[in-house]
Image (cartoon, rainbow, N blue to C red):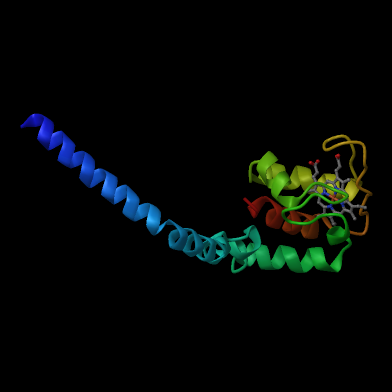
Length: 138
Ligand code: HEC
């Protein structure tokens, strides 16, 4: 009796397997179609923060300066990506002031051999608004 039961479960399992194998080709094509549709669900850091007033103000000031020719949000170009900078430094007033200073005075050595030029025309206030935007990007 026990053997018979095991056997019939085996048969059911086998037919289920055969069935799902038969449908396998359809399943695969279904998966390939649904994968790209699911991908855009990942929100970029820019989209995540775009409505934050700190983000809007900081970005407006960055655009008036030369920052964007060396920095991108999620990709390293000449300088580190802003996301990398945000990951390295906690978003505290102390770090905002300190990093505003590195932007105004220029800096080298924290990220490698390439120096960031000084920005003597930038006010401390504008530099801090830019850094508040940068440190949001996490
Ligand atoms: C000519 C290219 C260039 C420009 C223009 C530039 N940067 Fe940089 N930036 C760099 C490089 C290179 C570094 C890495 C310096 C280092 O290793 O200490 C850097 C580093 C930084 C850091 C991290 C500083 C640290 O000590 O970790 C911040 C924040 C930053 N830049 C913001 C800005 C802002 C804001 C502007 C615009 C006012 C700007 N950068 C313009 C190249 C640039």
